[in-house]
Structures are given as C-alpha cells and as structure tokens.
Amino acid sequence: MARGKALKENAYRILASVPLLRRFFAPDLPASRPPPSPDQRLRLEIVSHCWRYDRLLTYQLSSLALAPPREVEVRITVFHSQEDEPTVEALHYFQAQGIPGVEVNPWPLDRGRLFRRAIGRNLAARQTEADWIWFTDCDILFGEGALDRLGREVRDRQDFLVFPRTHMCSPLLPGNDPIFRDRKDLPGILTLDTDGFEPETRDRAVGGFQIVRSDVARAAGYCGNISFYQEPVASWQKSYEDRTFRWLLGTQGTPVEVDGFYRIRHQAKGRKGKVPGRSKDRG
Image (cartoon, rainbow, N blue to C red; front, side, top):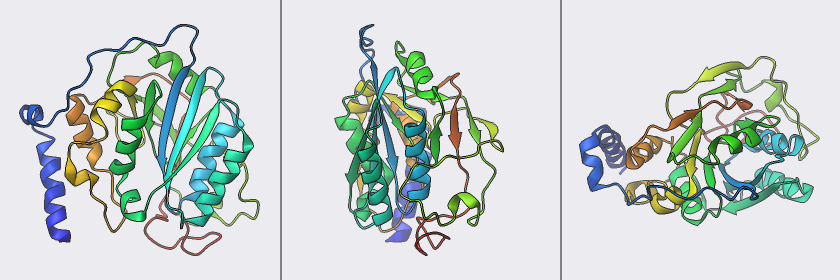
C-alpha cells in the first residue's frame, strides 16, 4: 500500500510538470474581483498546521502578540490534534490574550487528516471569509508592521497567488538549540533573537509562503479536486502538493517586495521523533 501511494505521489508530481494537461484538472477560477472599499480593513486568514511543534507555534503566535497588525484584520487558523496537549494549551493561552486585530482560531482534526496538510488547507480555503488567505507553517514569524505592509501590497492586486520575494532565515538549528529547550514559562509570550538570520530569496510560492486571493481559494480549494491529496494518511507528509497547487492555478506565484518575515530552520523534527523539551516526544 505504501509503495502504491508513493507511485501515485510521484505520478502527480510528474503530471504537474506538463502544462498541456492542466486543462483536464484545473478548476474554474474567477478572473478578477473587486478590491475592498477604501474604508474597509483588509482581512487576512493565516493557515498553519501544528503537530508536536508547540514551541515553534508559540514563537509564531508570540510574533503576532508582540507586534499586532494595525491596518489589517488577521485570523490565524491552526490545524492541530486534541491529543497534542501542549499545542492545545498554547492555543488556549493565546486565545485568552485578546490580541488586537487578531483572532486565534483553533481547528482540531484527527491525526490522519492533520498529517496531510492539503486536507486542512482545502477546508480553510473553501470556507474562508477573508480577502486573502496565507498557507503557512508554524516556523514562520511575522515582524513589526510586516502584515500591514503585505496588506497594502496586495489590496488592489488581481494576482491569484503571491509570495514575499525575500524573508529572513535562521541558520539550521540543532535540536538542543536554546530556542527548543524546556521552558518553564510556557505557555507564554516568547521573544526570539533574529540577529543571526540571513536573507533567503524565493522564485516561486512554496512551503509556508503561499498567499492566495480568497475568491480563487474558495473556487479551487487546495488541490480540492485531486482526491489523492484529500485522503488521510498514517504519518506526517511532506507538502509536495504545493507544486500541484501552483499547476492547478496556472502560476508559480507573483513575488512581492515586502520585508519583515522570518523562518526558523530546524533539524529536530518533532512531528517524526523525539526531541528535547517538556515532553520527550514533543518538538
């Protein structure tokens, strides 16, 4: 069965490299949409997944608490498992903070559906009420004013898919790095020293940097018409489907010149094994 799934995964990755075949799979997408009215704050939904990554999620949510957006309304939807107690605890803590302009929206899934990120992303895409929806990962942080600058940049755009051309990235951190160590002050708001971060440039919307116009997201879902990517799985899956998603939209994404975003690179994969921390199998 595992071999069959791997072959199917590879088949879709190959399929997504053939532009002429797109017309047989592509959903009907709206060509354009009216921008928000000048007196309306832009609404952004950020969609993250967390499994045994409560520390990284805490840094992500802390970045919103420490520098709340002033010009955009943010809803951060976090797909997680109820059995991942430290993550549930972190989500409840940040919900209770009442961060100005930010709604923390926990969305529990059973593990089989959580482990395939396309499933949660598809659910959020179909139901979003925002103007734009950002499919991200919990190792992405939002610096002072970054989301407001993004809002100004995309407000009147008609692009289907955009991404920050450049973000700041940490060195590859080992599992015993101080930011992953046991912290007795959790749950809580944590600050992160980003002095050692270096610029990283992307040429397409990949990984945690996929920002989609919401009417397009509602029409397409996230690989919503590819049944293979909507099937539950037994273990955490790499997000190869972002290539298929770009193929379905017919674009690699448009880069935007917005700074203030950060990514934590980490060796310790809490979702797959044991790492240092409050619990021996939490990451």
